[in-house]
Length: 234
Ligand SMILES: C[S@@+](CC[C@H](N)C(=O)[O-])C[C@H]1O[C@@H](n2cnc3c(N)ncnc32)[C@H](O)[C@@H]1O
Image 1 (spheres, rainbow, N blue to C red):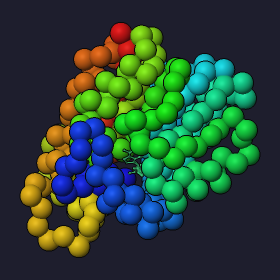
Image 2: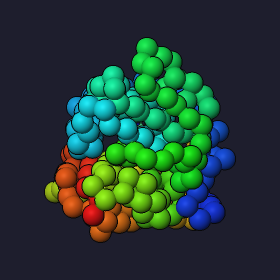
Image 3: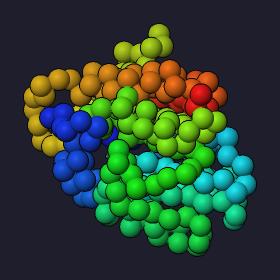
């Protein structure tokens, strides 16, 4: 669930797109299972949707929606009169998201880059397990804050190193998962430790959100290895 941070950086504000799309395209089915069945994940997704502070009739966008595991929770918050848009650049995961939400006529999925998404006028943006894949995560958060505007909400959820007393064991497991989910997974050496890079990108994104907003949620979950930050944009 950490998402590939990718080995080579990339153009400003874009993720390591080719690798990421190939990776998630290949593993869409397995990822879908993990995204919806990992113990504790449903409660975390509900909490993230709640931090968006949506009301019936609102419009919410999920950037990097993957197989759509958050979309039903967002739909529940905005009701039949609201609307939900899921954005992702990987076709096979989007097909799964489309299938999962086929019964709702006010949930739409769009294939696009989350850092240049063709969406406007929304009340909240939710982004879970994605910013570690972006070359300029802080810049992306600023763009999402601009998109929702003052009073709108941006909510981020990400895996990152735990700071609890038992952190070494948790972080060893997280490092293994991060390496396994950093394409190409056959790589033996990295220019930068994938977990260090994930931590840097997650910190940059969450710090920028704190700068741009008043806190709605500032929490850790999963033994301290998952951060949830939600803010009302100032
Ligand atoms: C770890 S998955 C998370 C999916 C979903 N948010 C969840 O919580 O299950 C990361 C997703 O982000 C997508 N992604 C990464 N960078 C992206 C970008 N720049 N634009 C659109 N989608 C992106 C990938 O295709 C993948 O589906």
